[in-house]
Length: 327
Image (cartoon, rainbow, N blue to C red; front, side, top):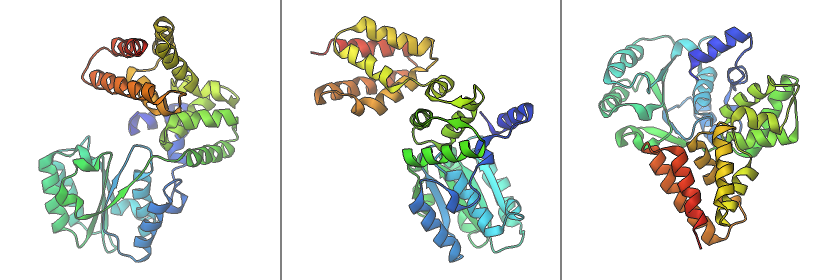
């Protein structure tokens, strides 16, 4: 859901989106990235902020860290005027660098420097990245750039060498659980321990997904429990995935296929989601090393074929069939 869509939903329902309502306002409020927070705090305290490159999966705090830096440097009243945020996946051409970024960098709004935040910078074209490198050189005296991306390897080396690089890792289960419990308490929502565990499992290290899932599950009833979370997130229970794989390995293809059909049609899971859960759970199953290796090989092959446009259900059934034939 885009930011505009989220705002529309918030207006229509009269409820604020929780990922914004509970977005940390300072670096110290960020959960699960303590080492990164400590390093960024030292830059702010020494008043010596370099260009920054944040890399890592979605929902791990990259955008939050960028806005928190701006808030701490400029204060709550002035940070927006000194902070330009662009989503490079929507505005990825060279004209964005030449026009909007250069125009912002040339202007002055008090303070020693302004901050340009480029989200999803790995979507910038090669020409735009080359222009960005020159812009970073030209305006290094009065502008700091913060680049956020999922894959830092897609950022050209000349830009990486000009930035302090931070790797945001998926958030720990403890960090996600702590944040969801805090929000549930603030919203006076009853959430069971099993419900928290389900939120953590469904989030897979993505805090944004966990908070959105909590808000969605809270609208379905008085208590957020395991059943509500799995239903609202279209996520299979770990035991369902394990049962499907175990049945296939034991040669019961029909039963494994029936479980897969339930996940795809009744639970509403996409083929890619099934692949992701298989990959996450393979080492948690009670499988021999030979069985685990065979499963990983089949998962990788099915994932590639689905990504190339093959029929999801056919490929997943083929995966189960190949496991059923393993000796």
